[in-house]
Length: 197
Image 1: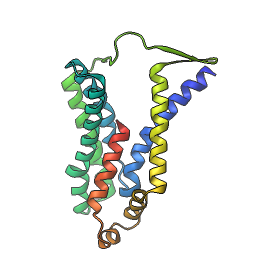
Image 2 (image 1 turned 45 degrees about the vertical axis):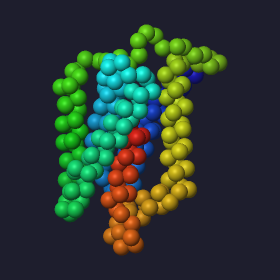
Image 3 (image 1 turned 135 degrees about the horizontal axis):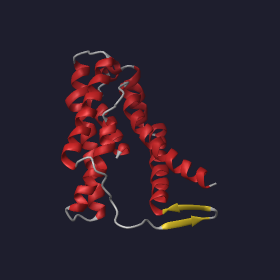
Image 4 (image 1 turned 90 degrees about the vertical axis):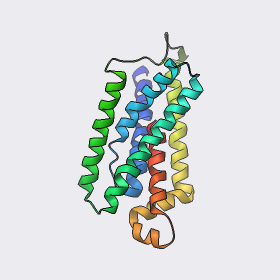
């Protein structure tokens, strides 16, 4: 039972990351590999904010905003420009991989390669029947389940999900109907950055 509980925790957190990739891939058909750099930068930004004496809520918000900004910058500075030039999907893939490598190496230059710890001391242990988890695992389960639910409901029951599918099917017709393809693509990258944070 213990192994199953740890598998559920890991599976939910990985599902959120996979959903972050899907948030960009659905409307743009771009493999947003640079999202891995968001996954690297966000904890370091939170750690740096905590080292500067910022309270936890402010550090978490700042780190999440950094993740959204990095992801949106990938769209504005790379993918949109490549798309306007009519480049092949492989060019998007290679450029995104290059951005990922550059950002990860920049993080290593700034913060070093040594592991950093966000919390001081041992985490609080929570026993749920025969399963023993730590408090951070319970937070990960609740947050992951909430994010996945909100994304799924939003994609299925709001106009945003319909617009994403319309961009994926025919971006030219979507633009001809008066919608801003660029704005919806930027929203997709921002959602991806939020989920990847």
